[in-house]
Length: 224
Ligand SMILES: [Zn+2]
Image 1 (cartoon, rainbow, N blue to C red):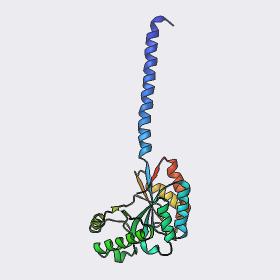
Image 2: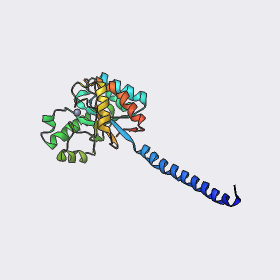
Image 3: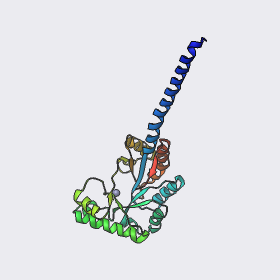
Image 4: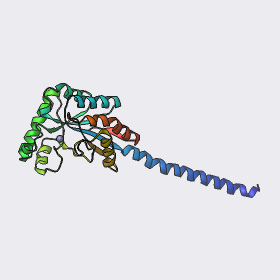
């Protein structure tokens, strides 16, 4: 190689190295922040039940994941131990309803607030926990009720993805898994609606696969 080419070669290699470094930085930064942003909240409505809630708690314990349970107060009697287990294992207890009877709770904003108070009192009496999150039975917007709930200090939690355990009649675990993947696509964070009342054995069956999917996608699991 002729001597006069050496400075040009050094310059060329330096430039290549600089570009390579820059390229690495450009790909590393978004990948890192994207990974941090991926978050999912597993939320279970309509429990507690005996076997389904207990099975779900076993899976969450095994996976070391905290979730949020929106409780129906009238279903607590005889299942106090399960309700206490939810709290003891570090999950969040939320108010869903005392009765879950739409005709009663949605007759007026005051009725809904009274129903929420009764459910909160049940949770407090059994576990000593004062619930701070609320989910409307059936979802939807209820501005007058929402105002009363916020005055009581509640954060109202909706959802943006479903597993389909209430929406698809007779759905098996495979269907619940596919519906979860489909409805959660592009959502950030994902707030996934599941149910842990007695009829939802397939939900418990689908849960390990649902968790595996979000883990593989780099999601962090959070509770409210
Ligand atoms: Zn419900």
